[in-house]
Image 1 (cartoon, rainbow, N blue to C red):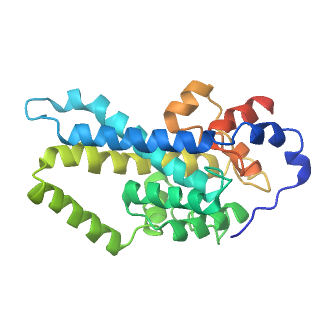
Image 2 (cartoon, helix red, strand yellow):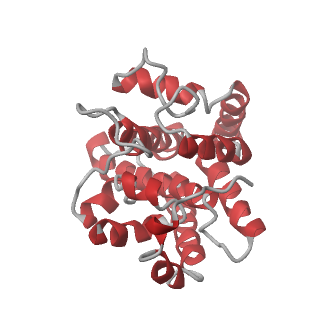
Length: 253
């Protein structure tokens, strides 16, 4: 396992207090997010929406998108070893589970790429960064996604979709609105708040060493938009801190 090396001066004042608060809270929050996603999706897939207009479904789609984003944020915390730091195997098992639920993404592959990103942000070997040619939002997004998706995942998800539709007899509209669409919207949300905004080069150039900037928003809005992923400079400076602890770092700076 690759470990991030941070100057002790950055950690001394804040991390002992924050770590003392996180004995089992990370595991509890992960269980809540996964449970909420499973229960919500199960109910929505069984819902009769044949007489409902799309605009009536929009709030529910956004809610499901929020839960999908929570799955990925949980796996991201697992990559940093903070979902359940007392047991590495359980921690990474949770990360593997949440990434599989999110979209059959390979945990070990993303784990290696994520550490590479933290060690080399906004560089030519940063797997999350554009290649100099794809700097606009959608160009960067598609360039980014190519590095994480494979034909094997797409084929597997297609098989699951058709199994749910033709064997389990789940209506295609339910599958599209509550399973397919929220996962795609979540990928846009995560990319926008976790990569595009914080890692786009500012007018004055990048501030080393993290090449990341925080999107300053009220804490409640930061949570709603992307589980505090907008506090990105704080995340790079304190990569061993859980997403739900980032507001304390943000307020303390």
